[in-house]
Length: 256
Figure 1 (cartoon, rainbow, N blue to C red):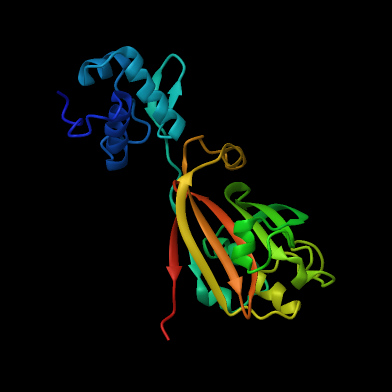
Figure 2: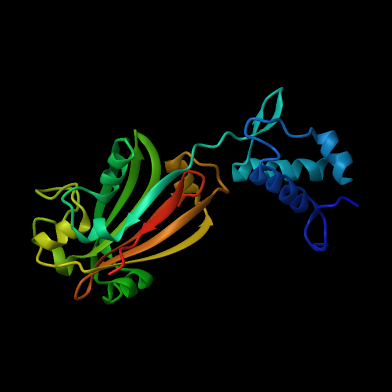
């Protein structure tokens, strides 16, 4: 019996093969650009049918671990260098006039920019709870695609209560005199002081629409940062989607 099977006898054979190959890739046993064993070799090693071996390989292609080359074989996917995304309370608290994302990119010697689209809508239950407003209250929802040197690196969807920004210069986050400014600076201009930023980090499989926007494989894993800015009350909340193969998160927290 192959050594990778262990006690997980209820796991389908193709998933056990995928687990073993995935671990070899993560551990560096199978290096980026290296050709993996052929289907007959996988069939013999793991004592499974061609169909099962093919299913395991297809799963890893979907997850973005492997790439298939017609007439050549299947190879370990070349991974982009992992870059650091700094989440700095000090930077946020100072309310910089420029976006924290752009400042972070400048610190790494890269150009930060974004595409965006805003619309007036109503708050769904989860967002209403995060903003401490009633379900169905009007909000400004803005979707962002953030770019580093013109390449998409992360997504964000932001919600702001219109009760706080309606008829102010910052009603539309990316238009007017405060276009491109961070949330702290924009809210201060509307008369709301931000004193606290809360972030909750989770992980999940990427959605198809997100994969298309980020040029990622369907099945890739993303981090989701649920970020909320608040003062006397929450003023903005956002879901930030970051592919795990491109960024690691670093939190800078000053000690008082």
